[in-house]
Length: 128
Image 1 (cartoon, rainbow, N blue to C red):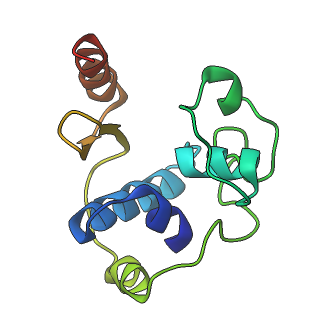
Image 2 (image 1 turned 30 degrees about the horizontal axis):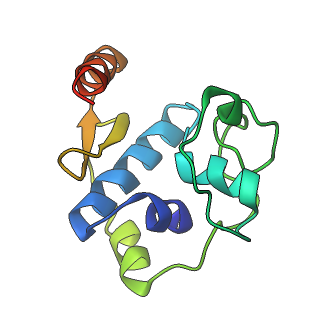
């Protein structure tokens, strides 16, 4: 879990919220759908993916792709900073189940419901 947080989040507070989403999704038996795992499933950590993910990437049948598998990948996807592990062990609580990264404001946007997530994502994409 900490490796997913390490790759996904930007700041310590972001790490707390991302960790809460991952834990909430695991508790609710939802696929994690973490983009960093999809990138790892393509690159195996050997190079930087120099393009945006596309819909076909999300369907990549790989044991690391959390859009394809349910639960956690078999091994970490990166080395983890000690602070990230400490943040995960804080067991930060939120009601969030969804997030996406907003390039315009350079932060993740969190949602409690899929309906809210979809609405915020549509607004973001209109303004891109």
